Length: 137
Image (tube, rainbow, N blue to C red; front, side, top):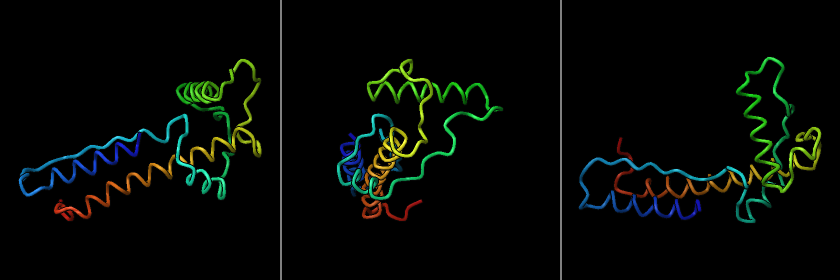
């Protein structure tokens, strides 16, 4: 999970900045979120539900959008409905921007997942700031 990734990154920073390690280094840290399914600890969901993000004004690509844009939207909807146990064929037109419903759930879930991973990035940055490498360029 992202918590484990952050913990390993913090450990790596400690090892890379030890007095025994005197070589230049680079640490690349890749997190999983905010991809579907949106998973985050409860406090992040509560905060996202308390202040939900605005829903998108548009749920279909503009008329002059590229084929890649249309294909990307279709693949995203397939993933969304697959993760929610629904099939696209069972729905005529998904209403992602309708007040409440699936659009609101997705916006809240995305917000919770982004906030959670942001907290994990913060842990890594705090470890770097507290290390002997703080301020190095």
